[in-house]
Amino acid sequence: MKFSIIAAVDDHLGIGKNNDLPWHLKADFKNFVAVTVGSGNNAVIMGSNTWRSLPRKFRPLKDRLNVVLNQDVNLELPAGVLLFTSLDQALASLATKNLTEVFVIGGARLYATAIEHPDCVKLYLTRILATFDCDVYFPALPDRFKLVSETEVQSEGDLKFKFLVYQTNPS
Ligand SMILES: NC(=O)c1ccc[n+]([C@@H]2O[C@H](COP(=O)([O-])OP(=O)(O)OC[C@H]3O[C@@H](n4cnc5c(N)ncnc54)[C@H](OP(=O)(O)O)[C@@H]3O)[C@@H](O)[C@H]2O)c1
Image (cartoon, rainbow, N blue to C red; front, side, top):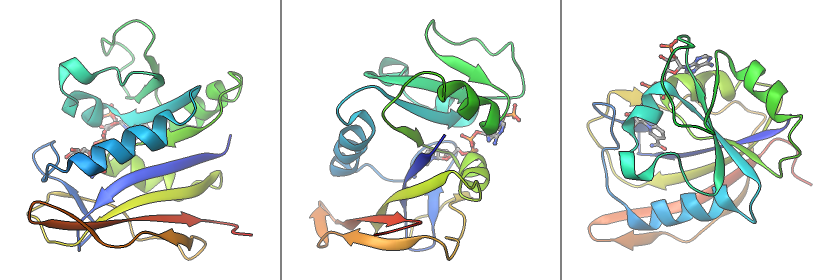
């Protein structure tokens, strides 16, 4: 089952601190919703720490099938949220569901596995042009990912950022 990764990173590929995002960027939330909801019928896969990091009022993420990875199969989740113990198990199950797109949405541990997966074909990266105090990082991009689009630098408050898309087989 082909899938994409979506992440926001700082200058040093930092993505989080104390199980939270180090920044608050409305434009990035908006982009995250637009990309992952798309035209509907999409799934998002996340590690259990990322699930816990979502404010209760926002989880499960609406209009998307939510999938959580965790070793403990007794993790309590709301009805409709799927739980698997590995990325491959999750992808195998999602492959039977006739979904339009599947996104891995973090965090660091899941990104590290997902980016090396042969079915990971696209990467949506928000590059925040700043350095934050982070305790978790996005992995280095393997060479097979090629940049296919890049927006102008945008700003919100003091923050500057741009949206990049990478693909493994750009045509
Ligand atoms: N900037 C961004 O775009 C972005 C996006 C998402 C999250 N984040 C940040 O990332 C941080 C959380 O990242 P994290 O690395 O601590 O946690 P995580 O990847 O969200 O969750 C880790 C847990 O999920 C399970 N898991 C992860 N990958 C797995 C795999 N391949 N197979 C099976 N289980 C897997 C494991 O459960 P077990 O412990 O049971 O093994 C692991 O403990 C937070 O700071 C969050 O705010 C940032």
